[in-house]
Length: 438
Image (cartoon, rainbow, N blue to C red; front, side, top):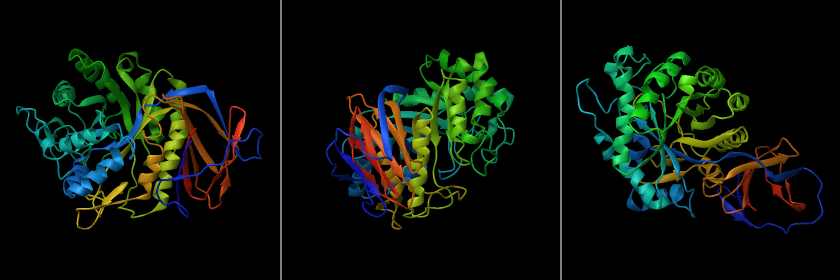
């Protein structure tokens, strides 16, 4: 019955700590009550994104550093066992520039660009995991010739006459990856469809996204025998999650093709909007598709780790089935990024580029990773007697229970765990996360 802790003052990285024995009598609150008989959503997994930036930074590491990196993220027992990750269709901001699988209207469709860095990195990750990684495909922009502004950056819209051809790009990309034996779990329609970014971007109104799914993307996937590919709408912030979902999922034509809604964290938290989508459309699903700390690398900042912890725990408690971090590895400045949109990542390269430094956020993510919450786990009821302790719990396929507890206050907090008539005495230190396997 292990407990793992990461704490600012005691254990700055994930460390197994000793536990007392269970007691038959209850202890004074604050306590955390678990009820394995109350079930919620089934869990998919947690992972990050294989961007061109991450792959190039990985490529620059020494062989020993590459092994350490892959072990930390993907080893099923010693690492985080990441099993669910994201890949971009065409370029994104964390690429070296704008590029597309078909740069000209009559040109050949090719994923050759991915073989230089991205696909080799995924192959190394799968070798370490010992299994295929479920990949989610997301486009930032169609090729420039398909857009109303004739460029991949600065928003613009998909030209109506290219809707069918753009839908076929998703099909061709998925089929090309499948031919190389990669496992494509699903796709999102468009990354951040409400934002005109200085980087690769494309705008869709809720109605435009609805109609593109219903008339073009959904039928194209089904015609190609890809009906099992999950279609995720929105793929933007929580603030307008319900608005977008209500337009698309209320339409029977579009909704028949849509697995669920994806969202990011770059505006207000708005966790109630995640719950609202579940309440309004309980037969559809929710997934967090991207989050990172903006504004540079944020070397060693504990607050970044706590942002991850608060978000993941609250998202899981509001019916989210999977959670995708953004770049797996960035350089010492938080890049490369072809428009200077530098950000943080759980691992950052050293200035020389051949080694990396693990950030506190990595360990907070590891507490909630497939190492402790495997694919197929089911969230169960967990109730905390104090607002100072955030909790989420899962019943695992092996019959054990994983409980994650986070204390982001400045004070140590008692956290006595109550389960099946017994109590486990506990203490969660200030600014700490703990994972119990019960």
